[in-house]
Length: 328
Image (cartoon, rainbow, N blue to C red; front, side, top):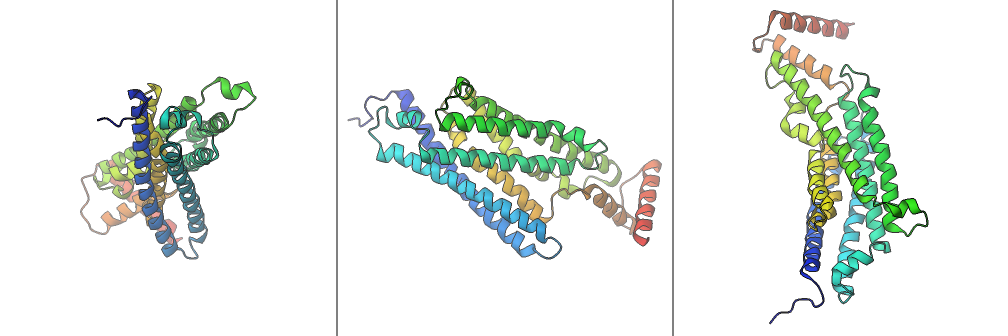
């Protein structure tokens, strides 16, 4: 004997399955967010002193805002699932019908606003990290950062349009005539992919050039594979693709990844902050510091890899300059 829902097609049931699975995956992501938030908060408080007070307070406020937004989003997801599957189980069309028709109720608006704000805060962080990493790269910073900054501003504008479209019935035709979902998510994804590639290329080229002179461990703290993946927010970029591809194909599988997308972006952000608190991220003067530390290590009698005469002269010249600057 079958107890399957009546008046619901197989497509409706599959849509509900993916929606519920996405809510569960979102809860798992929130658990990771909670753990990372606690770790970051403890480490930042532990290391706070007079020399880094302002930076620590900034990051404490930043991760607190991110955690609050992640909590609001998680609560919204949980309540909306409860409304659809429990409190309104006999809604026409089942939970799938409830989802399709009641997407603008207050609890869902709360989740959507939290989602967009999380996206803005996280995108701002990775754009800032890109700017820091490309400082002293030999190319004017405004040239490097022009496209990411413009894309970030455009993403904010599309995010506002998307919120207006899904949260209200606006009388302005521009908000309802177009579906802003794909443009908004596509631009946000493009921004993150661009920044991911830019940061990875910068760190890889720095390590590659240094390894030719000082060996393969040169700057490994900042240029290891793990460092590149965290610094570039690769986790969020790859997860965004998992959502956007099936969404563009109108496949319900996109719901699994969409609901967890905000938590994954928060995880990527908190990983960057955690490495920052540990002192393992690239800073404005990291390139000079790594070179100086490596040169001093080799000059103290430790074996160095084979260098060409030109590289050796450059190394000696850099070391003498550093010593003169220190003594002066």
